[in-house]
Amino acid sequence: MSKKLIFVTFLAFIAVCMGCEQWPNGTDTKLHWFNCPDSGNIVFHTLKSVDANDNTEYPVKLKEPLYVDVNIDNDASSLTQIRLDIALYQWGGWQGCSWHEVPTFGLLANQDACKNGLPCPINSGKNQNLKITMDFTGYDSIISLLKNDAPYQLMYKLTDKSTGKTSCTMVQARTFTNQ
Image (cartoon, rainbow, N blue to C red; front, top):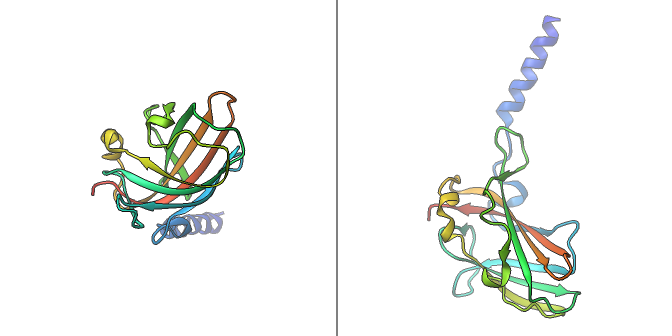
């Protein structure tokens, strides 16, 4: 019995010492993104973070507006009434080596996408290049609580208000929260 207890304690010690990788999916050097599994009519093909002058910017900075160049297909009709929901996740922590949602108390939910950085309308069609503006400067109460120079994941979900269909993409990035 005591040998088993020592062995289990040793394994637990090793697991704690090894911990999580600091930068999942190579986010120390590059943006990582993917379409959500249940993404609807809007499909993202490319996504990159840029500064105001259209130069690639990485890591991303949440204390100033973030610009994202995307290439999408919209397989639906033209969209003009679009709801935006954003969820923020942090990596690792006491809950294990995975993404854990950061409570934002609804501040980033149920926004008018067309008034919050999404160029509208989103016309029907393929191979559309858009520049999305994500401005978190008004959410300093959330941003100031986040660890600086750490990986964060953002879910960017669009809902067509007329049909209820959703489309979303997940973005993982090395993030500066105090610059």
